[in-house]
Amino acid sequence: MRASDIIRTPAVTISSAATVERAAKMLNDSGFRALPVIDRAGHLVGIVSEADLIRNQFGAPESPLGGGAGAAGERPARTVAEIMTADPFTVPQDVGLDSVAGILADRRYTIPVVDGDRVVGVITRRDVMTVLAAPAGTRQSAMRISETGRHTGRPNLPAVNGE
Image (cartoon, rainbow, N blue to C red; front, side, top):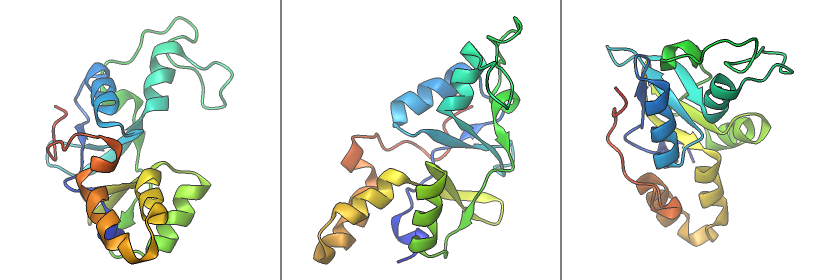
């Protein structure tokens, strides 16, 4: 099984110029923990997570990465570009699901799937769990459900909806 068999398409992405409020709403509404960030040309430039938004608003002075707005009286960042992680970890469409699952189990919740520098979808821990939870003979059906997002109640969102 390959990443392309279970990726969520179209990818829910957000513009680097979008506001942090827009990112918070999109993450909340979509049920994802992180969103790929794209530039005006549609190229992947980063990833923004729930943790980034929380740190930005409330700070984390004890964090080795430094504090957010709550640290040292700084004002919160306004755009996604200011808080995103640049150059995110990605996988190509043809990578094996066993490799993706190992990466997700170790340290990631959401992995952008790319074709060059274009995001074609994302794979989450929930997607892999959907495949694991399906009886062996019904895994193809589980993959189709994963693609629509119905198994988590997530809405089907347009590919780029975070300006």
